Structures are given as structure tokens and as C-alpha cells.
Length: 288
Image (cartoon, rainbow, N blue to C red; front, side, top):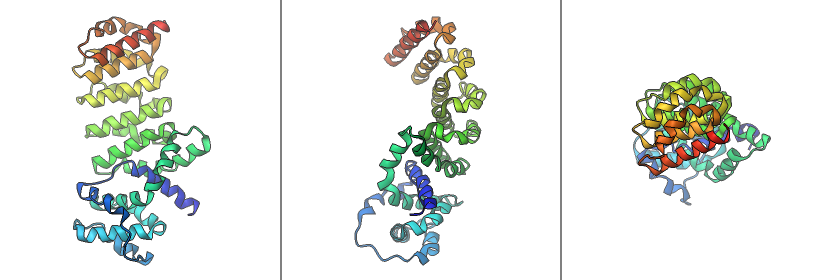
């Protein structure tokens, strides 16, 4: 496999983490191990790719099996298919790619966790393809691309401007995952602070919680958010209260103005909230 296709395959493996499937496609994973498959000719790639638009399982399954068997020569076509306007095409192409890339997923997971610079650079090659998916018309696609970029941490810092735009997405899952990805990137995403602070008042509890998380991960860069985090200690949602307490604790002495509210939270009805409040108080007092 050439270096170019190897890099493209890294993006493919990243997409394997996105669960790019519809209920129809979920039934096909079991067929991946079928031995008696028809012969495949690379010249058939265009016609087989066209069949990915079909919702007819009897036509779609044979096309996917043939494309899977063709393997590497079809990678460029599949990558283009991931950006097709037809959702069925994007889903089917991702299914084919997943079946080819599946054996490499454990290595990709290791890549995402490896601190070695050269390994990190390899993972980074998936970022441009994922950035394209952040603009997809389908909210599920955008949210899954958010998730994959979040797994890459600081290696996805070039996606920050694009992720910031998604903090205003109409879909709550997209907003929460974008906030989560920015938090995973850390201080490199400090330009997102104003938008993340606004998200603390989002109507969706999960979005508020992920905004808490993102601000906590930016630590010193986000200390100006303390006044906006304090009201969330009284949020109606348990997860939001807990994550707000944890975020304030990450700021240490910079969050000393929140001590009285955190002390009140020690009597919260939820054990996780009480634990987060106690931990936050310890961190604030330890650094005071």
C-alpha cells in the first residue's frame, strides 16, 4: 500500500469509530466473514459505487461484498462517496470501508493514545477528512465526526475553527460533542472560550455539562468562566451540577469565590454531586 493510500486509510479507520450505519446496514456486519464471494474486477468500481444508492438490500449487499473484495484500488472512490449528497451512499461507503479497515482499528486506537510525535503525526492525517464531515447536512454525521476529532485530542487542533461553528448547531448532540472535542484539544482551543461560556446557558443539559468539561480541560485559560459556572451548581440536572463542581475545582484558588456554593452542595441528594463538590473544595483550598 502506498503512503498516500495508507494516510487515506487512517482517515477511514477514524471513520470506523463513527458507527456510520443505518439499521439496514447494521445487519451486514455478520456477513463480513463469508468465504464464497463472487470475483471482483477493479473496472467495476464505478458501477458498484452507483449501486450504493440503492435501498434494496438484495442489490446493495452484493455490491458491498464486491467492493470489499476489490480492496485498496477502490479506496479513493469510497472516500469520495463519503461526501456524496445521498445519505445512503455515505452510509454504504462507510460500511465497506469499515469492513476493510476493521483489522487495523486496534492499531489506530493505540495511535490515538500514543504520545510519540511521529505516531501522533500519522493520526493527524485523518483530520482533513473529518473536518469535511463537520459540514455534512446530516446531524448524525456531524456529531460522529465531532466524536472522532475529540478522540485525537491536541492532534485535531486545526479543526478548532470548524468545531467552534458547531457550538451553534441546531442539533444538541452536535453541540455537545463539539464542546467535548474542544475540551479534549485543551488549551489549543482557547479561542472557543467565549462560545463555550455562552453554552453554559444552553437549553440542553448534556450541552451544558460538556461545556463545563471543556472549560475544565482548559484550566487556567478558562478561569474567567468562574462567575458563569457558579450558577450551574444549582442546575436541575445532576450531571450538570457535578461537572460544574469539577470544573471549578480544576481552577484551584481561582475559584475561591465558589466555596460557599460548593459547601452547600455537600448536602446534595446525589452522591456524585457531593463527591465532586468535596473534591473541588479540597483543590481550591489546597492551592489557596
